[in-house]
Amino acid sequence: MKITTRPPKGSRLVIRAAEEHEYNRMDALLTQRHPQAAPARVGHELRLIIEQDGHWLGLMLWTSGCQHLQDRDEWIGWTHAQRAQRLKLIVQLRRYLLLHQSGTRPNLASEALAMAVRILPSLWQERFGFEPLLAESFSDIETQAGTCYRAAGWKAAGQSKGYAKHRGDLYSFHDRPKKIWLRPLFPQAVEWLRAIHLPARFEKGATASAHGQMPVKTAQMNSLSQALHRVADPRARNRQFPLGAVLSVIAMALLSGVRDISQIHRFSWRLSPKQREALGFRLQPGRKAFRMPGYSVYWSILGKLDLDAFANILSDWLSAHHGSLPAALALDGKMIRDAIGVLSLVDADTGVPVRLGVITQKEGDSDRCEKIAARRMVANMPDLQGALITGDALHADKTMATHAVANGADYLLQVKKNQPTVHKRLAATTAASPFLPSPRKPTDAWKAGR
Image (cartoon, one colour):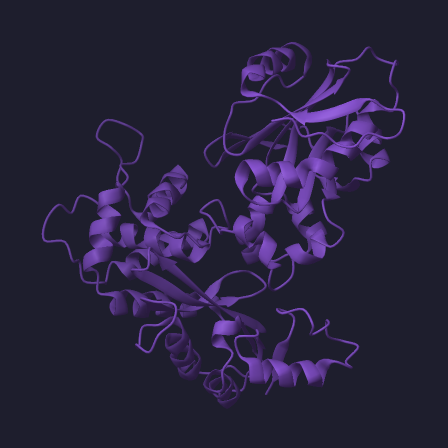
């Protein structure tokens, strides 16, 4: 594969994706000449080579973005829930190494940076199946001014906190904060990252994996485990793992947006020792490591669990720990392999769920389909006075709106062209409004009110 930019007139500078047989040479150069050496290969990784007339002038290593970066997240302005779901749409320039003799190409660093971000979305799409929206990188505030980033159109967005990822979700403090640099890959990238709904072309990269926001704080995990321990244990034997701890992992994983049992399993292994201890998992005999359930444990329990009891106890616990209702609540349904799912009413600002129900299908006429379960959830909320309920096109119907208004809430529901009559009427109504986007876009028409 050789994808290049169109170089400026008179230039023969080329940026291309590295071939796999070139990786060892890249690692050797990074180890010899980069202050941080060659990193371990984990997750999504794209290697680029900067060359001229076939000679290597520089190397770039792009990976997934940081999971936790406070100044970056404040710069974007997205919520915790949005960050959890859309984190994969951020890519990081993890290593950048120029090989030319110092002083011979004074503009090469910024020129290559500018060229790279132009081709990065298409390269990432070809390699991983989706386009990213934002690029991030770092410069050492003690040794580098970051001039090349600024010249290439990157924006300074604060500093890191001086921690580096050690392994898993564990971080070590190195006491060397770095300046954060950000570069939108599309003109509206930041607006899209914090929008209620992403444009359809980027949804494949917003999978809400278990790398997302932890929905429960460590200090609350013991309380959650004790509450869920009241659910009737469906296991006849082989109870080496406390039920409350296992159900807590399932609940937190589902609320983080996972889609299948294997992701629940992986989610559990990313819990820190303090979190495992708070949930009630036991230490392995003679070791300081906690014994954790395997895939089969989660599969077995979910197949036999009293889903209503699980949902009711979890909802009561969420209500008790949430306090007053938030000003904005979003309906969100997640299915696990079309067998079981969770419908949650979520605080749109923090991503914290305030009510939860069990669903077994996205659409249909059964009591457990997402549409009907959402109506029932909103209708049974004790007090929604002053709240705003948002939902996608699945929930845009008269019954849902009636339940929201009856409980004192406003609603903001998306309308698509699969409801042609309502869509046409809204398009005509909002055509002259200076406050709404053009209704000619198929996903931009909205139904709002009381």
